[in-house]
Image 1: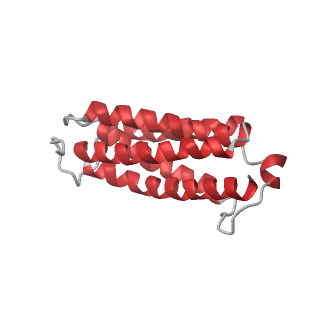
Image 2: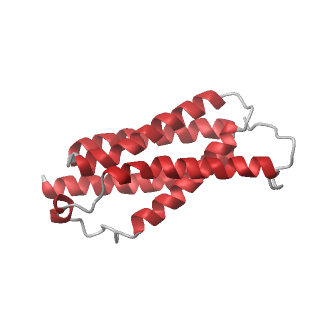
Length: 168
């Protein structure tokens, strides 16, 4: 069930709502980038790993994650401002999946534990699917905004698996 809003769906939010939207986007980008402050692929260990043939250029990761975290921020804002039933569950699932997202980077890079990171990203994948379903019940637009994230997490899980397989 999609929440009823007082304004028509095609109209832009008012100034206060727009400021809150930007705040959500910035907040999710900050939270998502925090693990990179403490760990990164710029280590001798990671450089020494054999990479699969489909490993993207390094510049792809910050660009893709910034775009995805921006979409997540917009989706979260849509659900947060809704009064639809299921909102609390959707927000809770979002928080849990975000915690798993944040846990992956230090597990893989700082702990140098690709297998443990694979377990985290597989759990993350399940949580993202559950979050999309919960968001769909609140606001279909919010759910749709998470689909590129699911695609990237799927790719990242395959990449994580291959990095582990090639270097085990």
